[in-house]
Amino acid sequence: MAQPRSVDVAIIGAGTAGLAAHSSARRHTDSIVLIEAGAHGTTCARSGCMPSKLLIAAAEACHAIGHAAEFGIVAERPRIDGAAVMARVRRLRDRFVGGVLRVVEQMPAAQRLDGAARFLDGQTLQVGDQRLRARAIVIASGSQPFVPPAYRELGTRLLTSDSVFELEQLPGALAVIGGGAIGLELGQAFSRLGVRVRLFDRGDRLGPRGDAIVSQLATELFRSELDCTLHTEPQARLSDDGRSVELEWSDGDGRACRERFDYLLVAAGRRPNLQQLDLAASGLELDPHGIPRHDPLTLRCGDSAIFIAGDVNGARPLLHEAADEGRFAGTNAARYPDFQAHRRYTPLAIGFTDPQYAVIGVQPDAPGEHELAIGEVSFADQGRSRVLGRNRGIGRLYGCRASGKLVGAQLLGPAAEHLAHLLAWSIQHQLSVEQILAMPFYHPVIEEGLRTALKDLRRALRRGEGPRSDCIDCGPGD
Ligand SMILES: Cc1cc2nc3c(=O)[nH]c(=O)nc-3n(C[C@H](O)[C@H](O)[C@H](O)COP(=O)(O)OP(=O)(O)OC[C@H]3O[C@@H](n4cnc5c(N)ncnc54)[C@H](O)[C@@H]3O)c2cc1C
Image (cartoon, rainbow, N blue to C red; front, side, top):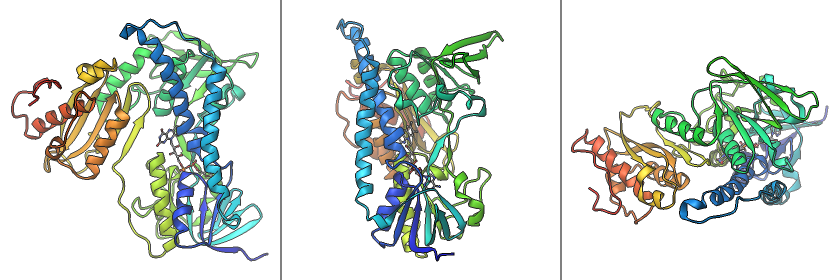
């Protein structure tokens, strides 16, 4: 048998984490190989963050016209050119993918290998007919949509985030399975673009979890706009002509319901891409989900020379985390056995729905070592939000009683994508509530809503001293 090719670092997967690992490892060695089993371009650009936000942008444009009457502007009911909407999604999506492809093409050819990698042992990989022996390995193989077995036989009428952006036309009717970020973002966007949407979730809540008050309001707000059937896993069958999907479920009173849709979009979570890797041969210890046990600070699996980064490790399946983990895993692999722990970002997750939501830092259902005090703002009467006609939602800020520091938050409301960054940055810099309040807040801005919540939190940290007042942005405040 031919000798295996020897390299310092082998990276499995050329997605965001793998590309970041490659670029950081290259600062230490040129003896690297980046292995990709599928199409280059990353999940983010091809079928994740970017096309979903492009679809949402179209939906927002359409929604704004529909709501112009609130401002005294009478607009004609918009005519939606579904083919043009989907063509723009794909055209700009392809630009983003093209940017990634250029990065890959600029890599030395010897550092790229196409094919599916699997372990032969803890340091050897098989890729097609090639064997690779690596001093250290980075697993960055990402994740894929999970489709429950009940929905797997729907042929071309079954959609996931991998296929939905390939539609050339907007469907007439779409059923969505899953009320998490992806299901809500896509369900709401299609609905705002005139598609008849019904969203199902087997739980009783939509959107953010961890704070019952926020999730209850989120569920109410999303249900006020979208047909949502909760506590329900409908049955699905392909229609006789194969051109639609028939769903059946029973309502709260046990009555049988049946509805026909053009497609079923399944957004029921994602599973790490581990099946092809033959991890049994790697010698790694696996957790009950089949994911290699690893240290989140070094990303090292057990006491091996294998590191794991990005969605595949199941910890924080988000783009900025995949990039960060990839960078550290790449550096640690290249410097192995001289590897280091890295400082993790403050947890930050955003749902690009309307209203947007964000989950930041420590959460009330997992307070860790903190005893939490909570400050709150309702966006219903927040000045700037009302001016913009976007006055829906709530902000809940969590402070540590012992230190007086802001440690976490949940937001549901206007501009949450921006407010969430201010909070995450403050938390990461370990600012106290007093220190944040000592910084300027312009007027009139949505950030003033954060100030209201911070003042409420300050009161709560002082254990409820003084009456809670409705903070008036235009007035002196307190
Ligand atoms: C619809 C949708 C919307 C999203 N929106 C957001 C958002 O708004 N913000 C956000 O932060 N995140 C978002 N995400 C999540 C984000 O896209 C992911 O966290 C990120 O892309 C993960 O990057 P990764 O490198 O871990 O995986 P990927 O980019 O998926 O890369 C993994 C690569 O490994 C390859 N591979 C798999 N197995 C093998 C093998 N055996 N051998 C070789 N190669 C292999 C795969 O082909 C793939 O190219 C979204 C995801 C989806 C699906």
